Image (cartoon, rainbow over all chains, first blue to last red; front, side):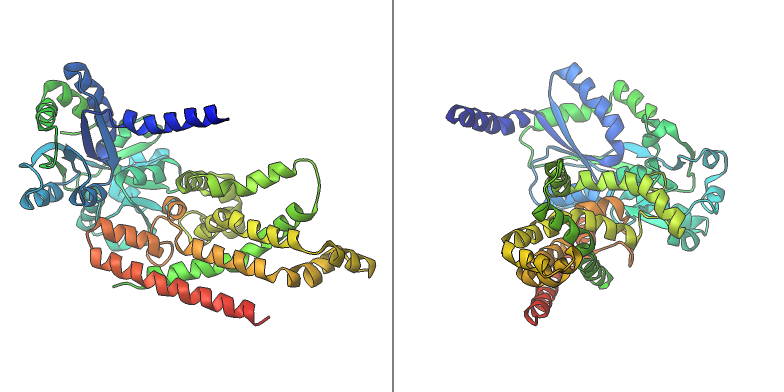
Length: 244
Length: 217
């Protein structure tokens, strides 16, 4: 019995050590997840460095960073928050790493064959997912598009709010919501191919900025990673997921 | 400052506390007094929400309660409404999530009963249903009060499950915990702090009220 207990304790104590074996910790806005999951292994292949990423909404990551979370690089879904960190002296100068598009996505086949502003008022759609319009940049962009075509007030009663763009897609992909305003990148995933979509051209492009955090203890590796983000290899990955 | 999330949280907690005995009391009764094969299986299923991460439970419920899921389909046929993203939906999620918190104290209270009370009631010709309502329940009130308080407090603070099935619709599914979370994300720290502070007296007062009701018996 004692032996088993010792063994269990040893394993438990060893776990956190193993989990912190990454050379670089990245705070990644949720929408870029599919692309980042390809970039990380490519970076490891090119440099040998182990990168770990946390994928969640920009707002949450920003709150964590300002409260001292130990990230090295912050890849946001907007320009606003990296600029704020820079202004507060918490990060190096931000740079744009991707421009994302909003799509109107649904499991229903007929949605992809009509322009989105017609599809969105289709009487068959009772619940439409949108990311939090206050904290998720893709949510804000989708709201602006709806306002632009004068449908915001009309569609508002049908909207359900997700905490991040990833959850907006989850609502639509599970069929819990009939359709959703999602990131173009989600269309290229296994789940995304099961539905149809149209690009929301009225939505402003989501300009995504990144910055190296001043609290980082691995600035040299962070610099290498940032350089790698501009490489042709990453450009190919980004294009594959609909980013410019 | 919008008070609707606080009101909604209290509404959800009250509704959960009022409705949960319908499911929890018979379950606790069976677990306390009956012997049958597969009892431990029922016991484990009832306790599952206690150990599952709320997000896992929430995602499962999202699929079950969605328009394509079995529960969601039934609900749609019966009411012509969608189950997810509605108050009924988060109430059902809340009932599932709280079931073990109600069943455990009730079961403990039933098991503590003097078996002779039940025997007397049987000898005097009361049916088992009548025994339950006239002998078992009145004699296990402290356990019921404990269950009610636990469930109430627990559903006031509920977050993960509702995050998954609610959709944060103002006035319908945007409860206080979700509103606080969103306020923190939007850097409205004052709102977050205010709502967090408001929840404490609200839950405290509600617990006092439940205590009084139980004390009056």
